[in-house]
Each structure stands twice: as C-alpha cells, then as structure tokens.
Amino acid sequence: MRLHPLPDPARPGADRMDLDTVRAVSRAVTAAHLFIHLVPETAEEAAGLGVTDPGPAYLAFRSAALGAVPWQVTLAAFYNFSPRAVRAMAGVWDTAPPERWRAARFRVAGRAMRRVGVRLTDDHLAEARSLIDPVVAGADHAGKVLAAAHASVALPADPLVALWQQITVVREWRGDAHLVVLAGNGLGPCDCLVLHTATGRLSTALVRATRQWDDEEWSAATARLVARGWLDSGSRLTDAGSAARERMEAETDEHCAALWAPIGDAGTRRFASLIAPITEAFTAAGTYQAVQERPAPA
View 1 (cartoon, rainbow, N blue to C red):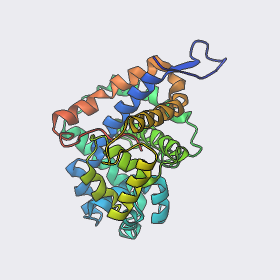
View 2: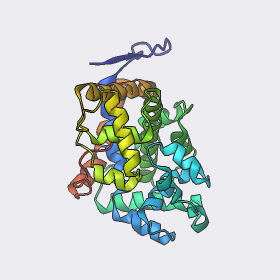
View 3: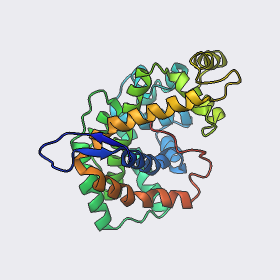
View 4: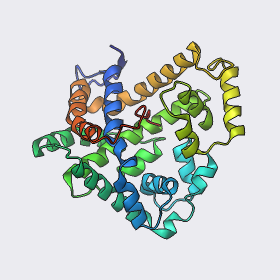
C-alpha cells in the first residue's frame, strides 16, 4: 500500500490516500472514457459536421470545450502531438462552431453506450454522481487546462451522458497532471512517446500515424533517451528507463491524490466499481479488442 499524506483537520481519519487506489481509479476512468475515440458513431457525427478526416475530427471533439481557439492552443494542451498533426485542424471551427462539436460528442457518447447496452440502474447512476460531483467541484484546476475546460461545459440532460462527462473531467485532470510531470522530468512531447512505445505495449505505427513525428524527429528523441540511459543502443527499454516511467506514473498518482481526497479511499474504490459496466459493455462488444494497452492519461 502506497500512502500519500493529505492533512485535513476537518476530516479526521481521511488525511491519507492510498496511491494504489488512486492508480486503480485512474485506470477505471480512462477505460470508461476511451470508447469515445473508437466507436463508429464518432466518425458519423463528425461527417455530419463536415469533417471526414479522423485526425482533425479527434482534435476538434476533444478540444471543443476550449472554445474556438487557434490550433496552436490545442497543440499546447495536447503536448505529445506534433505541430503538423494539430495544424491539420485549422478551419474546423469555420466548418462547425465548438458548441456543435460538444453537442455531437454528447450524442456519440449516448448513442454508443446504449448501442452496446451499458447497464447502470438509476440508483447506481445517482450514487456515482454523488461521488464524482464533489470530486469535480473541489478540483484545483491550476495548470489543468483541458480539465478546466471540460468542467466548464454544462452537463447534458441525459443522466448517463452527464456521468460520462464528469468522468471526462477527471480523466483530463490526470492527463493534465501527467503533462506537468513529464515536463518536470525533462521529457519532451516526442520523447515521451518513444519511451512509451519502447515498452511494446503501445503501437509505434499507431503513434507515428496519429502524432505525426517524422523520422528525423523520432530519431532525435530516441538518441536523447539513449543518452539518458533509458533506452539501449537498440532502442530497447532499459531497467533505468522502466524505473523512470514508473517514477513518473507515481508522481502523477501523488498529484491526483488530492483530487480524490474529498471522497476518500472507500468512496474512490466504490466509484471505480460503479463505472465498471461502461468498460465491460464496450469490451464485450469488441470495441477495445484492437487496443494493445489502455493509454495512460496524457
């Protein structure tokens, strides 16, 4: 058990968070959120807004909460995409304004969850909201750009989609926290992808296709990691590199301990169990079959 001290004299007995619980709920949240990028409803709704290229559509759906910002702002918030990948979204707000993308994203979530038969009773939905709402309400968004943007979006009337949107906020909060950790460890946008793919648990081909770092940039990042001793001369992950990755994940857990503190360990574990049917339904439907690893929040 890894404990993180969180002194709070107003909440006796709740002044420490188990970091293993924090890690577990982060995985549960990521898994329950992930389908939005994989289901056919996403491409259908994007086409309805006039965008058929999956790259710009992904960027528009995920960044629409920021408003009609220039693509450079999206690049800054997303961190590990190359400028050429994000520049491709220039003009999407002329095709359809952000509020239409946000509404379409909610339609995707609702349509997809009902298609695969996500089963959450009204009581379970209410209980899940009673746990996640104070977490979102109490979140410190300093430096958490995407999380703050999604927290500002009005929740839809559909209770299931509203729960999913609250899940989105905490998913992006951990992602934003992880970017702070990556930057603090001197791990740049391309470097972090090279290090992750070196584990063999994330497809290099997929990353190269979606993040669009070219051969020269990828090779330069690889050389930097070799110089740090995190990759060997054959671009394989070293023990030091594996330890560095785990240390950065642990640092991210420590950031996130404060996020989940309002409901403590028991409430956090309960929330993870309550949202499990979302992941189970999409797993049973084969949505996650091609995903080698649920991506770490980033």
